[in-house]
Image 1: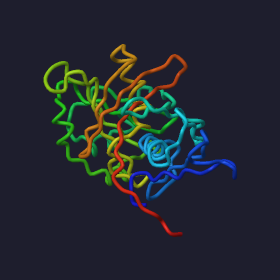
Image 2: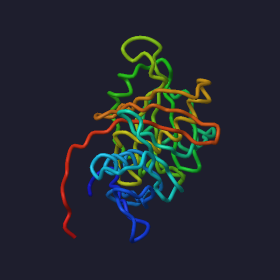
Image 3: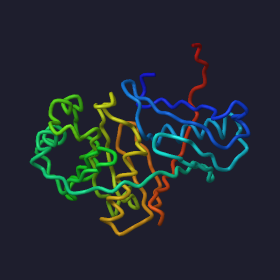
Length: 247
């Protein structure tokens, strides 16, 4: 569909109904691949069911490659119940060329890897402001030749939030790149925040956080870590286009 991810919702049983049923199958595809987890496409799927199909349930369950994911309505947000993925220290020597391609000579404060998601987390120095991350010119296509390990399928750039100014209250910022899946830069990424939430909760000693993804479109995410090893990520939505596909 030529978008970061296109979501396909399906009925699990012939008698299911998009208005009344509470459980559906869900798959996500980039222009190049099927992906195991996509947060914003799950939020969009729930938004369509809740607000276009007028689904009567307060909670919807999606059966996916990442197991069962639940979504619920909460005021003007939709809350996603996602897995929480741990990160582990990553040796710079293994991914030095990839880091160079991503951030050049910028100071890297921490480097982590999530084996479950194959995402590399690059934390830039706390001395940088959000504007530095936003203005960073990234040629993600170069990542394909720079990544030599075969382990990385997504790269997260992240920065600690400011304690003052107009962004006061935001705990961390990020940008996300996945050319391995045909996505040079993703605008707002739930699956990346399933990794970021684990990392920043550990770093900040917090279970409730506010995050902002600094893509050109950008997006704010409300994060709440649970005791059962999962994370709730809430975001707003807007229905901007309706149409029909003829197969």
